[in-house]
Amino acid sequence: MIEIRKLRARRCGVVSWASACRNAEAYSKFLVSGGLGPVGKMLELRLVQGSLLKKVLDAIKDLVTDANFDCSETGFSLQAMDSSHVALVALLLRSDGFEHYRCDRNLSMGMNLTNMSKLLKCAGNDDIITIKADDGGDSVTFIFESPNQDKISDFEMKLMDIDSEHLGIPETEYHAIVKMPSQEFARICRDLSTIGDTVIISVTKEGVKFSTSGDIGNANIVCRQNKSVDNKDNETAIEMNEPVSLTFALRYLNSFTKATTLSNTVILSMSKELPIVVEYKIAEIGHIRFYLAPKIEDEDETQS
Image 1 (spheres, rainbow, N blue to C red):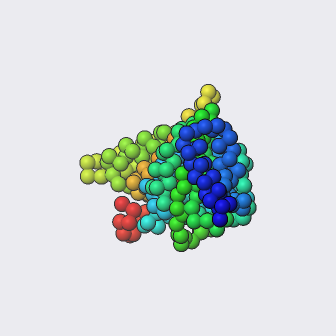
Image 2: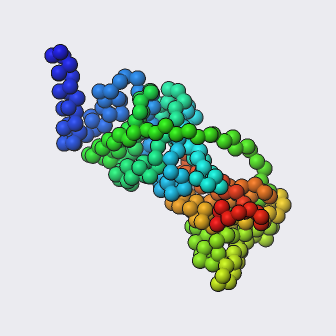
Image 3: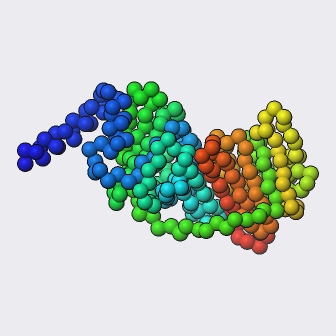
């Protein structure tokens, strides 16, 4: 009984040590190594560019409420659909993009994305973020370290039991692929939303055309292929096997453009009667892809 009391006292002592930020570097190593918890920690991910994770959550939290984050030896991923099953988001952060990556076995962690985003806002933009979870545990721990390690914070969030079907996304040879500045695409979607609810995206050899119409009139924006010697991020490049023209709901495309902060360029992949893929590269470590089903003339107004 005496030994148990001593152990409890030591556990309580850790809290005051952390809150006082004494010997922060040692405390950081203490937390990352497992603290006083079970030796069998089976998930440890340390991301130096912690701001990337914050930006990812900002991009998807309004589209998807709850989702499973899947961890495997290859990387940290998410696949989820919106409530109307019109749009799908797929995220991948490869394991080699983390400073430290340990995943002893495949693990799926259900989280509320709004709550996760609120928690991540507690991290500074330059903070290093470590994600930890126990094997069979019901919570996940986020550790935020300032660059000079003078401040360490740790937050625990309860996990959720989420039933979700993982869809197999087949490799597809798309009829047209457009690479353009992400800020330009975001502005086009925003501007056209002032006129109409849907946009027709048409790709030809000459360029990509965005068209809409509404009660107050109509609008057309054409982006032609161009080469930029100084900055390739400013290029509009088109690869096309055959012309494509599809109609999409602008409110979804505008939601996708919240990922603009992740990449200077966006890639639009299109084929007839298939969902468009709106892809943003995440630095050198992964990508986020949004899939949106096209509207057809006789369907109900689910997307509008």
